[in-house]
Image 1: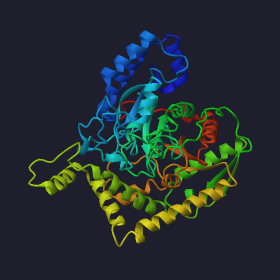
Image 2: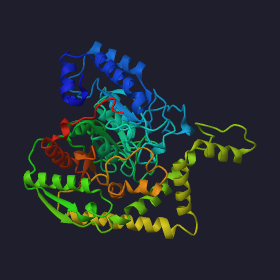
Image 3: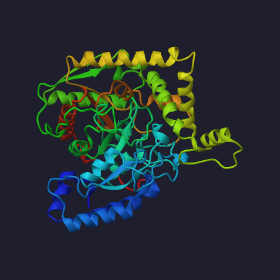
Image 4: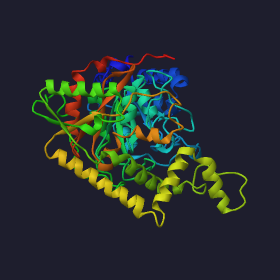
Amino acid sequence: MDFLNTSVRELHQKLVNKELTVTDLVKNTLKSIESTQNDLNAYIAVNQENALKKAAELDKNGVPENEIWAGIPVAVKDNIVTIDLPTTAASKILENFTSIYDATVVERLREHQAIIIGKANLDEFAMGGSTETSYFGTVKNPWDHTKVPGGSSGGSAATVSNGDVIGALGTDTGGSIRQPASFTGVVGVKPTYGRVSRYGAIAFGSSLDQIGPLTRNVRDNADLLNIIAGLDEHDMTSSDREVPDFASKIGEDIKGMKIALPKEYLGEGIDEDVKQVVLGAAEKFKALGATVEEVSLPHSKYGVAAYYIIGSSEASSNLQRFDGIRYGYRADDVKNLEDVYVKTRSEGFGDEVKRRIMLGTYSLSAGYFDAYFKKAAQVRTLLIQDFNRIFENYDLIIGPTAPTPAFKIGAEIDDPTTMYMNDLLTIPLNLAGLPAMSVPAGMADGMPVGLQIIAKSFDEVTMYQAGAAFEDNSDMKNQHPGKGND
C-alpha cells in the first residue's frame, strides 16, 4: 500500500468497496512502523493489539460510507491522554502512566471510528524545537537521518512524512506543529485558539496550547480537523462557534484574494534559500490571481521574548502537579516530604523542563511580576493589534514557517537561545490565537521548506482554500523522503 500517494478519501472508498480490508491496512501500517522505528524513533508506544481488534470489528460490520476516517490509522502525540496506551509526555516523571480517560480529541477520533495506532514521540512536555529533549530518545528526520524533524511534535511529523500513516495529531504552543511540518515536508495546522478542545492534552502554556492535525496534503488535513473541532463542555476555553466544513472551499480559485507579506518575516536571521522559496510562493499566488503586498508587523521582533516569559510562567504553574505524590515517578531513598518533592522533580524532569520552570517561577515572583510577566502581556496586546490592523485590509498573511531548513542533530541543543529563535515566525500566532498552516513550498539544502499561511480568527476555511490552491500548483506534493537514507 502506497500511503505517500493516497488521500484519506481514496483510502476510504477502497475500504467501503472492500478492495482493501481494514485488517490489511492496519497490518501494513504496523509493519511500516516496525520497519522504521529503530531508524526514526517516531513512536513511544504502538497499539498493535487494540488496533487489530478494532480493525476486525470494522471488517465484520462494514466501514460506514459517511465516516471518512473509519478504519484509518491515526497517530496521537504522547502528551494527549488515552485510556488504552500509556501517556508519558516523553518524560521520566510520567513513565508508565496511563490515563483513566480519553482526551476529547481521542474520543472524537474513536466516535468516527478512526484507529489509534500509537503514541508519537515528542520533546519532553512539548518543550523543544527538535525532539531531542525526549526521555525516550531523539527522533530523526525521514529525509535525512542526521537531521532533526523539528519539535515538539517531531514524532507525529516524522511518521506522516515517512508514509507510515496519513494523519496524526500534534500540539502547538509556539509552533510545535508547524515547524516540524516544515522540516519534514508535510501539512501542519494550528487552529484558532478555542476551535479544538484542549481537554486531555497535558498543559504546557494554557493560553497558548492548541491541538491540530498533521497530514500528507491539505484536503486530508481539513478532513481531520472536521472531526476533532467543536465545543466541549470539559474545556471552558473551547468555542461555541459553529464548525464549518473546513474543506468546503477547497478547489475554488483564489482570484481577487488579498495577501499580506510582512517585511519582518524576510529580514535578519532568515536563510537566503528559505527567503527565495517564500518569494517564489508569493509569485505563484499572484499567478493564481491573488494580490500580494508588503506590510509591517512592527512588534513581531518582541514575540520570542514575550512568549518565553508567558509560556514558561504558565508551565511553571501547570507542572506543579507532578510532585511524586499524585501519580507518575516518585524518587526512592527519601527522608521526609520535602525530600519527595525535591528529589522526584530533580530526577523526573529533564534539563529543558527545569530551565523553563525556573524562568517562569522567577517571572511570576514578587518584585519581578511587573517587570517581566506584565510587560510580556502588554507586548502580546501590541502583537494582536498589529494583526488586527493588517486583517482590516487583507484576507491572509504569508511568510516562512521557520527561518532555516532542518538542522543537524546536536547542532543547537546546547544553545537554548538559538533553539528558541527557531520559533521566531510561529510564536506570534500563538500569542494572538490565530489559525496558521505550514504547507510544503520548496527545497533548500536538500530539505523541505514550509510556507506559513495565516488567517483571521475562525477563518480556517479561507486558509485551507489558499493552501490547497498553492499545493495543486506545486510539485512538492510529489516529493517524498527515501526510506533508509542514513
